[in-house]
Length: 144
Image (cartoon, rainbow, N blue to C red; front, side, top):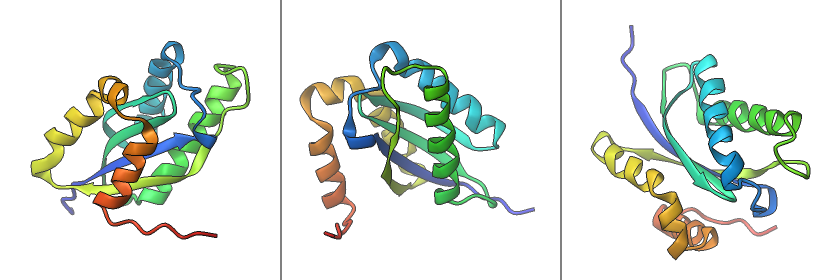
């Protein structure tokens, strides 16, 4: 039996970064994402976010990949949000997302970062956080 523990910090946004994840629905969405993930054998260690995006710390097993997990989480959750009329308009996630590996020694630091999203975004807009992720992790933006 293989022993696998791969930590990944995932970040994804609402379509056009619309502030649709209001305080009154945010926890419902997080809870649903966790329940759905558990049913699909996806281990979400920690989840939180703000009005226009979500951060998630996931541990992958030997049969999973990032694209598969993101497809399952984002697709099902947007369907569920719309089915339950949690937003006044059609809810969609942005196609893009961030996925960065996390070392075992960095897990607690990432958990703390995800936990403090509300306070964090009182000081910094998601666009600034996005730009910092691009720079910190050396992502290259392709202009169309």
